[in-house]
Amino acid sequence: MTRTARKAANLSRDEQLVADARELKINISRAAEDGITRAIKAERERLWLLENADAIEQANAYAKKHGLPFGKYRQLSWQGSMSMP
Image 1 (cartoon, rainbow, N blue to C red):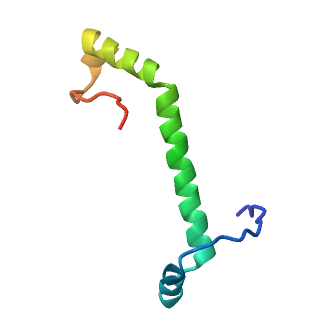
Image 2: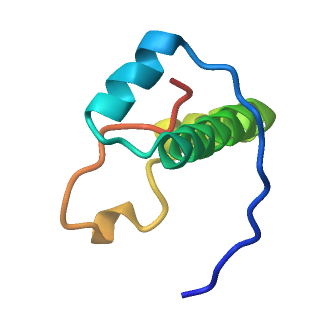
């Protein structure tokens, strides 16, 4: 397994939150890192959808008008579309 470089960071956290985490033996640093990782992923996905909204809309319009390419070869019917949340 590859180890990544780690950097110490001071984070202000709610005192009760820290107390609850310690009581439950939750690794606060790891939990914070996991939360930041999820937040970064969610923001990148949100930005990608915004940046590609026109292309997604065009693809949906094409599929609605013409059906999916090679759709007749699909075994399952397709009724959804790519869309922004």
